[in-house]
Image 1 (cartoon, one colour):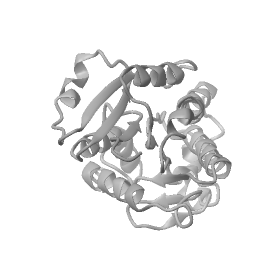
Image 2 (image 1 turned 30 degrees about the vertical axis):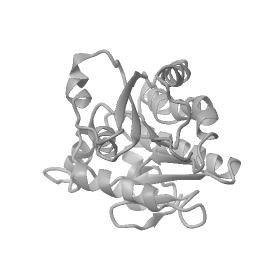
Image 3 (image 1 turned 45 degrees about the vertical axis):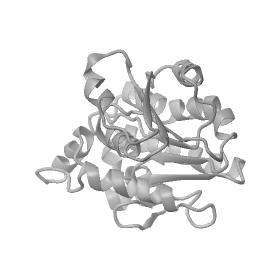
Length: 251
């Protein structure tokens, strides 16, 4: 939309990769960055609210509990009330990862919780925000997924140890391709953000015998934004990419 700000909606903006991406976009002029957090009124997000913003840019924080079946729709309604009339980019980043467990002993509650937060919530968000994306001249949907969701590479990655998490990421990968296939002019793709120095990433790294995850938040977030900047329907959309080394990961 000529003359309009670029609107970016980031879920899980309160910490980790989501926070880093939110802050990076705020440094770009003429951007409205919508960040979803569990409770937008909480003082724990004061630092995020104080993030410097470039000329014409602003942050809109909305509450979105990703285990809720109604919050995604309500969050989008909040965004509209805040004066946002379209959306250019959705970054479905929010996610959970329970204690790593294989299929023999995985707690079914962990499976259900992972599916609800990591896969069901993005479906609900997509359905709620699609009318705003349709008003963009170049809609983009990005799913922050994981190599752990690759069925093709499950044995090679030893991903059976994260059964609940891996199942949920495989499910949201399917959603991503479905969005790609259902919207012929959109760009919709999934990424593996690297093994990033977040609570979740460091836990995974320690399981592999590392002291901490090798990829910094700055590296992962900046490369993720680079991928969004340069993505095309023909070359990027409908696929899962490792943003750190640029390789495609098979589903």
